[in-house]
Length: 520
Image 1 (cartoon, rainbow, N blue to C red):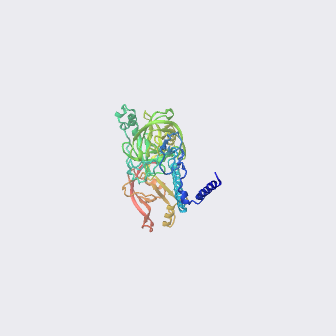
Image 2: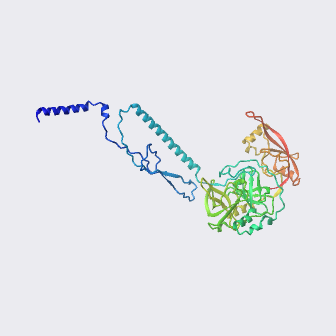
Image 3: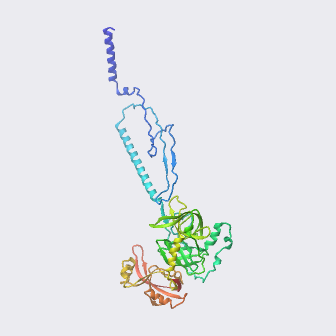
């Protein structure tokens, strides 16, 4: 190659370099680029990270749903199992990209950043909301041992469908007690259905034998169940059924109702002893809870919802002794699988021979939990109730039927002076007003049910005689006979006026009652 050709070649190469150097951005952008591959994000196993949008890869597996089986031993703080989804990992997805024909504008990048920030904020808010929801679920669904709540009053209209939440607080309608004269005695043989006693079905036999010994109990704050402990009117129920109640009414299986007196109670053992003025009742046959075997058939009879008296459910003895903490009180209880509902409190738990083996008092209440009921062993009840009966010094005597009354005197006035009601009475009266403040008329036999005691009434006189002590009341009623009418005069705080303009005054009211016999 001669020198001229060599120079020409060099000149051509330089021109080629100049062409590259002088090529515009537009011309350079039109040059073909090497293909690039972007891996599609995937969700790691066990996380809830959202998968980016776009068409899924053909090899992506569908999400799998793994639900852990429930595993419940006794754990009062365990909650119901939750379904946890573990999405499968997605396969990488390739896509060939081309450079943009024009350089991206800064404003476009700003929009992308704004969108990314908004998406991040939304996802963060969703995660926080989900976490909060899980905390609330854990609190609501915690496995708690609780006493079987009392059912509503029989006077309240309640549908079975509407009363579905265990532990729901019952309404508190006023119970208008209608005292029924007690018969001298029932014939115990009249309680039995002799045909059912010979039925080949063992549970039918138990129901025929035990149903007459189970009663329905209603108070001015709810309802429950009870069992007849003796033929002369002793009734056993749970303490939490009658705790704080004024009027207590017992309904026998023949639907006859009687006012009951509370003889004694034990919050520690959740047992209470009542008495009604009736003889010839059919008491339960007491079994031996120490001789029971796990797996034995058990039959529960009670008054669920306060409107289904003498309902029967059955199951097995799941455990003889469980150390359970019920509303802060440690108890040793039998565990049963028979269905227990609000209002079953105080009902009987019987063995297949019809012997009482326990007093129903608690259940496990949580979403999805069934068949975890508890009963006080009958041997515990024998000891506690037996001691109550031995210490019972109450006798039938004449009275006016008031079961709650505060005797406020000049000597003890300071014990009550801070009470808002007492302070209001003193203000209206211009000075302390001593006397008998009535708070419960549970056994009163009214001549006219429309004219009765009201909470807070202060007894002024009976048959024209001023009364300020219980001893003065007893002196008056002992002069009469059961059934005699008495004229009662009370001082009552009366509210008048309308909204934002209430006015109060003390006024006298008069009504008639009858002398009754009551346990005191």
